[in-house]
Length: 258
Image (cartoon, helix red, strand yellow):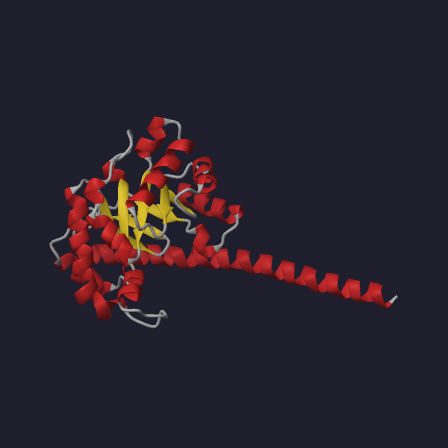
């Protein structure tokens, strides 16, 4: 499969990563010729957007966007940071749709007025299937398989994707993507531009199911290695803090006994 665009998603707010860990992911993406995408904490997270610019990020991810007003705030915040017009034109903006209100947003997308220098094709709406399933079916835990709900949730998502396509935007799908899910997606008539699997977002260029599955498997193995590195880093921080706390408490106890 001709895969020429793969984003590494730092997802730093989900993992509570330090700047050093985010920088590690950024360097990994550059060394491996991947595009780097950093996550903003909210629609008006100027600091996060500024950090993305400093890291020379290729993309910005915004989690749980639910209204045109939020989109307007996102664009305004980006304009404040990226004063260089060319930088905005090249920036990919990933909007995560993860709730019923997010689906309602898509139904009003025709009313969205983009600022100058924002390309519609560079704005990608990702549909988080697991989150949508939890909202629509009032599921309070993660003990479910997305496949069990695909017959209902996929048509809803595909309909929203068609609306986006008519308005010049691109779309992505994530959440519980296994081989059977891929078959169901490929059997649909809806064109999906990106597939998000964990830390990686993959641009789809050809409808070859077997090759795509192998590509996904490759990046899942890469993700396993990265998660192990991140886990080691977080554990080191926790162990250092824990040991420091123990030593300090022992010292204070000794001082008070004197």
